[in-house]
Image (cartoon, each protein chain N blue to C red):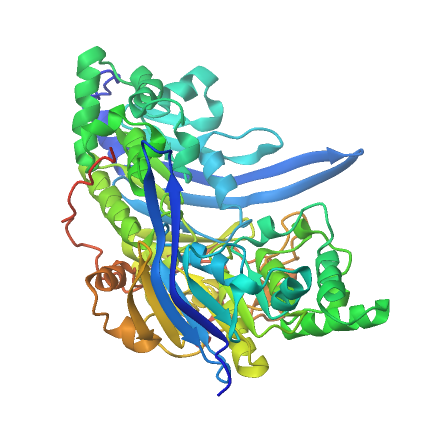
Length: 353
Length: 282
């Protein structure tokens, strides 16, 4: 219904695109470059990250604060401002109507793909919605320029879409403060999905919500993803959410992707000691074994440790970890990890659990 | 018989809104009672979602707000009578607080050690610089830090986990017997969270400090608490031994809360949505 305005590609091209991954991030380096009193300073927030996201897939991204996950998604969305700059690498999308390299587009082309092809669900629903305007105005402001319907048709489209996210269309007349936190978050999800985008970036959409509400919102997000057949890049530090929602999972540590694979494989058999720790330290109801915290603190990205960035906190670190940064290589089928120890012997990491 | 450490007796807190014509009341805390024994330090957990009144209750235990009705007794003394500066200082040296976001709790323009020094000067008998530093170093060592590590540093130079441990060290300076921790780990990264949680365990076991742990996270509550209460809209809907309650909740709300906890095993992954449409607030 809303794809009509897109220029249709030939069937041959569509077939070729359908097999290609929707998003390809290739050796991406994005640094914050600053000059303070004539001294150059750079913070390597995204350092040599490569990943692929397929169609109809929920890709999870986990990592602690200041691990560079927010910088990475901003770079992928093409929403970066100085001092954050892309130093190297590319971000390519294969949308249904053609391939786009985010950093070769003009600002007009970039804003044309926003919302209709690429949308963003933000964390704080209260800061997305204007507190002094009704919800319907948010839909008009965000979505109307990206669909080719107007007036009553647009209202119909929005109302039909609100029912999909389990909201009463009466919310359109409400002000943000009249809605509960869960409903506001549903509204922001509805805003991001109303144009049927192919790629959705969700930045901690449920972190601020209560447990019971969170479950409902996550289920709804999955349902709408399956309906639209779009892909979601889902960012959160909550491993339990990843276990329940995502198909594949990438773990970031200090600006680098350290492990990636199918979520179930990662939980069953983590190959990086950091992932192993994240999973084993999760408290569970019914499990009374003592859990250990990780020693040390996350490294500063302005001055990361040499070699593997995890080595000062790693229980398995060996001599080579201090000197050489391990590459992210496939160790088991479809399961990549950047760890010298795991590359030599994948069973070693399980021993720490 | 010596009095209990803390008695909360039929406490209510009512916030009124509006004027004479359009008056509405918000019953934030509704008839809550519990007590903590003086001779047995424990981790007492208050579980509730946002709006359940758990933070209001914490504010009343810290004597920063007065209950509308009911009494809170600390060592047999009604908090209502703790009014004079001397009494308040005396009370605060026994009951300390740790808050949710350590980056909000510390002023970014102030060095973190100043908080510790001023706590030592206000609440303890230490007057000379040496004594104060010794006292501060002592409580920092209890949380696995030292004065040498944090002296002269600003909040932005430290990680969330370190800063939260400094906040706990600050609370420990006067040797309190009760710490009220309001969501102390929800802003902390996963790899550091268990360090802070284990620290609370250590405080209970080694220093004999009772802890009121306020959270919405059932998994960490299960991990550290001895007893807990579950609050919904100001009322206590269920309470008792933590393991028993969380293993087999009885009240419908507790059951719902327990079922909403995401397990790592991914139990509801392919479950269909059965939830009804939420109604619009009028």
